[in-house]
Image 1 (tube, rainbow, N blue to C red):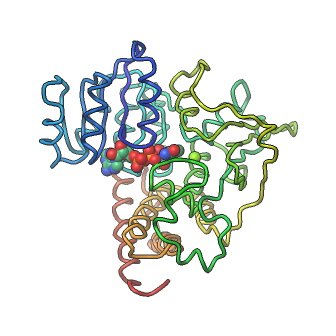
Image 2: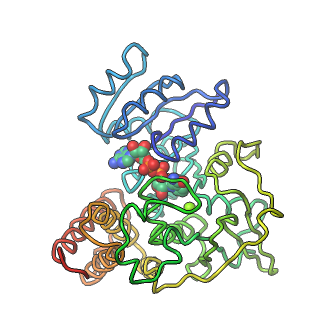
Length: 393
Ligand code: NAD
Ligand code: MG
């Protein structure tokens, strides 16, 4: 029996992970499930999977969770510290599927127990890649990618030497607005940005796909995870989302990973790795597909990609500042405080402010310094949004 924990069990990735685990109940012992405000979902899954512990991130929801688990014998806990404690419970495989930089501390706690961490939470690599990798090394833990592009690259690299890699190409669907004119983009609504043409995902990553901030995070994630130079990473717009990534080798070969857009593929690959096992995902009929199209991303339309390059050049804690400003800008867009295109402006202002403050981003990459940078970036993002309230940037 493999002991497994799912951090962010009630979300889109968490639910897809549970779907796979429920198909083979005899193979897994579920240690802990963590979630947020959806207590009913969390409690129902904890009961169905026979989890030892269920945790909500919200302290004021503890009584609700206890009531929902009454009679089950499943322990209940609440609060961000309880989520970290859940990640410390001994487990062989831990899914990191909390959204945002809130996933960093639990992910580090999981690595400190020397486990295998299936990493969907790309934000933790963007904020603190060096810290995550050093923690994994120190505790003999392993990080497996779950982001579809990074899982695709990881699979294309199996049996290859990194020294033979010339470039990594990650694809982007272009999101909900890929064919919209710029003047219409400025007026895009939250509802419009929350619907993805190909992938069914959580709301935040879906809006980040429309703005390409998701791809910007993934470019940085690629650099951190695979240790390649920024200029070796390319983004290719591929509206059909069937090729997830390509690896270009020094002999000119391009190895592509092709598959239906279903996150259970990448989750299942990380769950069964190093084996490849049958998965309940749709099979592609390429004759039916007929055509796949590609184009270069337009940086005027997607300033997030330009900002990601700047962040990689800055290095240090710039990723933490970038991600936090992006998260706050996204909050502002969802709350109706700013427009769709203003999100990039907010992030750029916050990064500029860090640059004018000299050495701030060059402090050592400790968890405290990452969280402090995250905190300051959020305040500055709020200030940028307040200053401009009512006006367009
Ligand atoms: P989601 O919003 O559907 O779920 C997020 C989960 O995190 C929920 O369980 C929620 O309760 C929990 N959570 C939210 N805030 C929290 C906090 N402050 N503390 C503790 N827990 C909290 O998100 P998702 O789409 O499943 O994405 C999860 C992660 O996976 C993100 O990092 C995302 O970028 C990444 N990812 C998602 C997909 C996808 O298909 N959804 C694909 C690739 C990568
Ligand atoms: Mg992805």
